[in-house]
Amino acid sequence: MKTKQFIFIILAIIFLGCSKEKQTNRAAVKMQDFVVNIAQYARSFDSDFIIVPQNGVELAFQDLDPNEGEHPAYMLAVNGFGVEELFYKGGYSPDYERLALLRKLQKSRKILVSEYVGNDADIADALHRNYSEGFICFPRSNDNYNYLKIPDTIPYPNSMDILTLSQAQNYLYFIDTEFFLSRGGVIDAIARTDFDLIIIDLFFNETEWTAEEINQLKRKANGGQRIVLSYINIGAAEKCRYYWQGDWYQHLPSWMKKEYEGYHDEYWVEFWDPEWQKIIYGNDHSYIKKIIDAGFDGAYLDNVEAYYFLYHDE
Image (tube, rainbow, N blue to C red):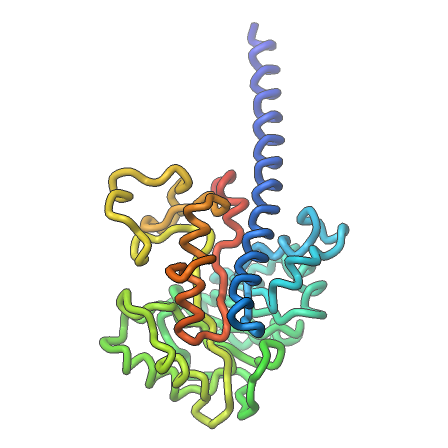
């Protein structure tokens, strides 16, 4: 009896593992389609609209396999790739698997790496490793884990006009403005910098930036033109966002599947659900349309790896 039970358990584990893999692969295809559709919608208003997905680098390939070649529609949709913690995750902890994928992709797309460097003494090494690969890097230390500070030092500062993502030599990732009391304070702080590329949130205290305000950010302190992208979370719903409905506090929609570990106000979503997609793009009230109306040059798409975390523990 014990032997039969053991065999049954093993078979169940194998079945569940295969089932999760199939679900993950199907969801990956849906995420590829999602990103492609977002890009096509945005570019129907602005043909030069920039799309940069964060993490989920394997989506750039057919069947998530670099041996199968690049996914043509996905690659046309994106202008670059953002990744977090490639060489540093507090301490030195290189992710060689992702590094191999990025080396393939950097021949045709810009790579933006945000490193979490626990010891400030390692920042120089993090920068060196990334720039040696041809990537641009934003190192953040312990007190800037959540992207709430503007660093004083800029790697490879320049006065060039940055007209395309490929020209950027550095970037600022700054999406939490809790230390600022006013909109003007944020604008002034960023305007005093010479970063080539800025990634900020669409909102300050739940109010969208205006096109006039974003336009002020498109000029570096030294006079050169730069690019401004809006952060947007396309794989997880956030309680703090304008789209969150009052009754969701008691009863989550069926497409909102599970809590995002470490972020108790966020939930991984079945991003292919029409209700979620309507929130993100395709109409005048959608998140992407708000980004376009605010005058951003493009969007930085976070949590594209939701296709994986829907079916796996973090």
